[in-house]
View 1 (tube, rainbow, N blue to C red):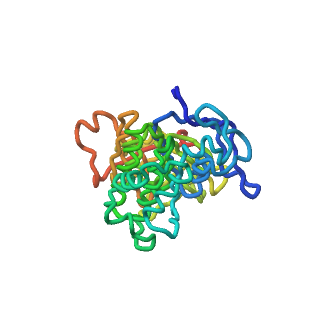
View 2: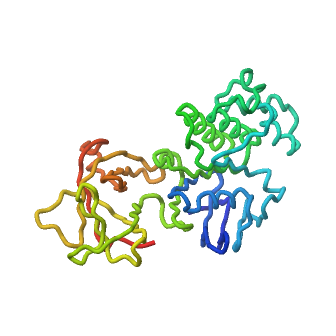
View 3: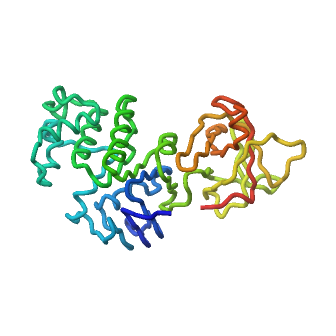
Length: 339
């Protein structure tokens, strides 16, 4: 239960060009927590971050920050919230001037050099080497870390990160992750992170929200199967995979509908399988620990599809599930819901 929310969103809807792109009945985010956002491209993650970042105004509904209603760019709140977008643009200035800019406009110019150097050190950049560099003399990973340093220099109460580790080198990925977690740990900064890096989100997040078609429908433990669906000769519906395994679903509301599959199990195929149960063979590709619950989830790859399976304690204690192992999984047709 959320006891001390820094954000509260109620009956929120965001519409672009007459089309709803985000609909949230209620969302509360606790102070000092880490919320992960997962979902396919176009699911509404970036739209939600822009609303939390007080950049956009919702078409309908309300956003409350620190206990009170707030409007985009409201000075009493905007200085406490900062968003790192997927492709942040640096100003055509030196690294020092880029980081100092936000401090100056917020009238935090005291000890400016110390603050800039401290922010650079947080993202693993030597101030003596980088502070005087021009914006064009940075690699992609270095530019992203400078953009993050500019935001960390403000010691924000809420730091919003949109795919912070996409398309950067491994060293930058590690430093970006560590810097964000430092802010949460040392300053109590609330983190909201949109990322495809599920293992990291499961490891660090207090909560995970799964978005699809602009709605929150789960906590990241679900498997989504996408159409198009076809009707087989025997009257059932599904897809035939490239290895001739048959992926079956109930009658879809439309051929392109997306199916959410809950309660997937690891199970050997019985001699007389039930017509209501689907059995597939795949390979364990990942094991993920969810911090909040302590549960371990296996990601099972079946051809190009990924299934999320919660592992039982005995499966873990026996050590029989590990990446690369061939396994069978099952799910029930009556356990599928359409979105």
